[in-house]
Image 1 (cartoon, rainbow, N blue to C red):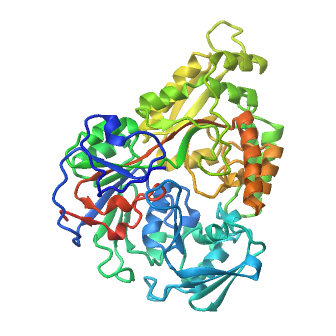
Image 2 (cartoon, one colour):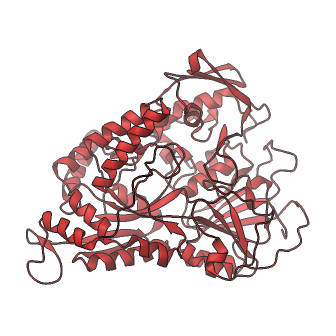
Length: 589
């Protein structure tokens, strides 16, 4: 894959969208600018960087968060052992040391990892960052009282021991290639948080309670308006860092409004610019586009369980919780998966219907029309070039005739001649939820509605405020929804599409579960041999293609719009739009 750096030789004038963002989705970072580059005076200190985000972070504690905004902010204030670079980005893929000093040493037949921490990192309360923080974080990650949704990545870690304050000894139950990746997820928390019972963490005001050790600290939170980070005086990075005094994350729910404010100079950076809006951005004087590989995909998720059956379960569950005077009342994953098996959704509980939806939607038209051609179709949520992906699997072609036949097999026909399919006297009508502030996904919804209408399927588009979107999905409040997942380098579909993830805190919102797929996912997750693990995931992919719990719409390039005054931003990565922001500076603070 080609790789490029922004400042050195990758600037060019933009005359059209294609010129602005190049071609293909798998290139390294590139930059296009619509105005002449100003003379660069070199790094200077001071100023405020203003970033447009679509919603408030759902939590400033990364172990309670689901939204990308939360992790974007967490990475500025909390340290990590290493930072991860994905394949095809502007840097070679792999783990790059952040808190770790030197190379880790493998012992005990590869089942133990010993490594040293830098000795200069300090929490904002004045205490040093030590091995005890690493141990405390691991204990929190695996604590059922906290219920971190990704706790399964720690399942092979049996102990974290401290040989001395700066030497970590991590013990695993087996040796396998991704040990450091699993150890690294996610950010470190201060051991001082042990004073706060973890079953109360969801009620904590983390804006005031979270000790930080990153380049910035949380200065102010105004709900629905902005989150302000200020330079952390305790940060022990290179001399003079961070250069920028403050970072303001301004909440602007609508995509077009964010770009308009960027062009007006009210914002300095907007990440996730839809390629269809690239011409608008590129036409603005002093605004540039940075293109990175697209490590994510947009999809339609289908509800697999009967909403009425879930509501009945939920009412009984809440009654039991009240009787037991239980705080919180989480769904049991096994119970939700059982409901989906016994009481499937009247429309989308049938895989033939889900297949028909995929075949009927003109996904290439979405790429050509809404992404200006800057996207690609995909067959699986396991993305190329990951070795777990089977490159022989092609994206299903559009085939409306086959879609009609599948719906007929499933018992749907227009029996009353009103233009809408029906079955058992009930019309094929459903709601499609979409984030209200995401213009691209709203446009996707309209095109999906058009394509399915031609098939005799009536779709009602239901915009949901971004801040309430995940809560609505968790409450099984949608027949279908348009979503987007960013993909890490470590494949683990158990977190997304498995019975274990169907409960509260899980991300299997549609409650899809298929016994063989679940077995393969668990086996692949625990397989130490790379080749055998890849084979298991490729078997899982074939079931996904047959079952279609998601209709995968497209994989798009990641575009970030940056005002010309921002310097040093070539460090941004596909999985972190503010990577190394402490080294950035503003040409006109």
